[in-house]
Length: 139
Figure (tube, rainbow, N blue to C red):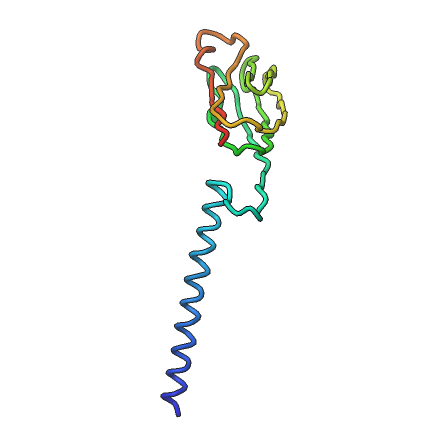
């Protein structure tokens, strides 16, 4: 009787491990699809999200200097000027903000266009102003 119980328990354990492996691999695939590409199913709505970006502006750099999002996402940016007056401009989204030193400036917009868009300072803060740039990448 004991050998039959051991065999049955072994088979149950193997089945549990197999089911767990299958479920885990399916979850990984779904997570990768939802993060990297829209789902192909016609029954699944294309989900959007809100990206909150905390940014700093200082002579002569934005940190971070790359923001990524998907079309339809809302992007909320809070920029803190650390040293002198700067600007923050994304021409294609008609965004133009003045950044005051030691003050947070917060604004939001919907990333409704796909592409790579430069953001930059339009306020002269010295000889490195032209290098104060970053990119918004919308897929």
